[in-house]
Length: 129
Image (cartoon, rainbow, N blue to C red; front, side):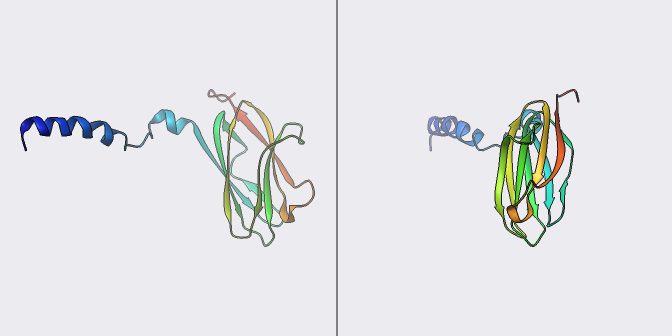
């Protein structure tokens, strides 16, 4: 192969190879918050009661024997901001939401009935307020 051909191939390959890298720098990591929920027949254990504003991922694992649901509610306890329904025993599902600063409620509904097992959840600003 000629030197010119190699230079052309290198020029074409460089952008393609660069497109294969992960975007896992500090800015991408700062936008993702992970909260785990263990939803059983009689408890809803949330790993944290607050998270910084931005993209929040709730990973809900049903550790009980009944089908369960998980809800993120507004501070009034009535507005549904996000939900994951029909989580079978032994199954894990995710709810990904982008949240502004504010107060919220989490709720697990074992057997998919009633008001659920609720807890407060706070989204803070980047400075912890």
